[in-house]
Amino acid sequence: MVAYLDRVSRVFDDVRVQLLTTAVAASAITAGAIWGAQRAKRAKRTRKLKRDAADMFDFDSDVEPAYIGGDLDSKQPAPASQVVTKHTQVLLTPNEEALVREQLARHYAFFGEKGMAQVRDSFVVVVGAGGVGSWAAMMLLRSGVQRIRIIDFDQVTLSSLNRHAAATRANVGIPKVTALKMNFAEIAPHARVEACSSLFSAGNAPDLLAGEPDYVLDCIDNMDTKLELLTYCSHNSIQVISAMGAGMKSDPSRVQIADISDTFEDPMSRTVRRRLKMLGIQSGVKVVYSIEKPGKVQLLSLADSQKESPGDFSVLPDFRVRIVPVLGTMPAMFGIAMGTHVLTELASFPTEPLATKGRHALYVRLMRDLGNREQRRSQAEGGAQLQMNTDDCGYVLEEIWHGKSALSGATDRLALTRWERNKPMTTSNCVCMTKDEADKHDRLTGCPKDHYPSETVAFIEKRFEQEKQLSFVR
Image (cartoon, rainbow, N blue to C red; front, side):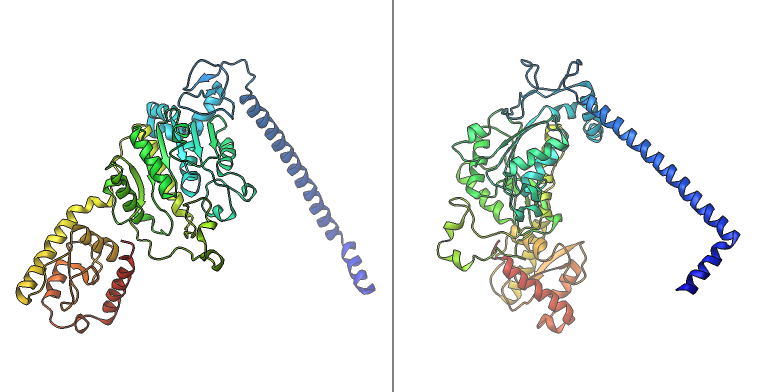
C-alpha cells in the first residue's frame, strides 16, 4: 500500500500531469456552467409557455367567445353535467378556436371548411363503451365531433384493458363511460360529452336516444338489446351503424362495411338479418362485420361450479355467460371503421363501401362453370346433378381456398371442380384450380393421390378438414 501511494505521489509531482489535470478540471467547470445556464433558460421558457397557455384558456377574458353551433339563448358554456343534445352550445374564445383548428388541421385539409363545419355541428350517440365503442367514440372526438353521448352500464375490468381505447389500471372498477369522459377532457376540453351509465332497452330508448342525434353507433354485444336499438332507430328514421361480432376474429383484411341485407358468411350478421326481417326490417341498417370464420378458437368453457346453474353467473339476465376470446386489435378496427364511416357521412364526403359480396358475378360464373363440369360427368358416369348454389361457390372460393388455386396459388381464371370423382360433390369435395388445371384434373382417372405430389394432397385434405369445422358455424 505504501509503495502504491509513493508511485501515485511521484506521478502527480510531474509538471505535465499537473497541467493536464488543471485543464480537465477547468473544462469540466466550464461545461457545467454552460449546461446550468441552458437548463435555466429552458426552465424559464417552459414557465413562459405555461403562462401563455393559461392565458389562452382564460374564460374570464373580456374577449367575446366564438359561437360554434347550438342554441343562442344562453351565453354560458354548458356545464359538464348537462344533458347533451344536437342544440347544446359549444362556445370558444378566438384563442381556443385557433387551438382547435390547429388540432384538426389535417381534417380541415381533408374535408374542407363546409365538411368540418358539419362534423363539428353534429351530435352522435354511441351505445356500448367497450372495445368497439370506446375506439369509435375516441376517434369521433379526435376528429372534431363536439357533442357525444356515450351509453353503457358496465365497469372497467382488468380483462378489458387489452381492447379499451382509454381505460387504465387506475380506472378499474369505475364505469366505462366515466373513464372515457375523463380521457376525452384531456383531448378536447371544449367538447360536450354526456356519460350515461345505463343499460339500453326498448323502454328507455326514447330518453337515451333523445336530442336529435345525427348518428347512432350500435356497439352492443347482447343480441336482444342490439335488436331493440336497431328496431327503434329504423322505426324513428335515425341513422345507425351496427357492429357485429369482433370476438374470435384475427384477420383484418376480412373486415367489411355493408348493408345488413348484403352480409354473408358471418353467423352474427345472419342472425341479426333474419330477426330484423321478422320485425319487418329488410335493409337500411349499415353494419361493420367480418367474413372470417370464427373456427380457430372457441368460447371458453364454464367452470365446474358454473355448469349446474350457468344463468346465475351472467352479468344480467339473458346475457352471455361463457367468455369470448378477443384479440384486442380487432374490436379497435371495428370501432375505427365505424367512426370513419360516420365521419364521412357527417361531412357529406362521398364513399362507397365495397363489400366482398361485390364478387357475386364471379361466384355466378364459377357456379355456371361447375354446373357444366358436373353435367358432363353425370352424362358420362350417371349420378345426381349439382346441388350447390352461388353462395356455396363463394364460400368455397373465399373461405376454403382463399381465392387461390390449390395447386399453383394462382388467382386468375379460377374454376371449381370435384376433387375425388367417386365421392359426392359437396363443399368438402370441391377444389379451386385454374381453368387449365381443372380441365386436366377432370381428365384424370383413379384417385388424385396417384397423380399429385404428397405435399399437395396433404394440403388439400387439410383444407377439407378445416371446412368440416367451418360448416358448423356456416
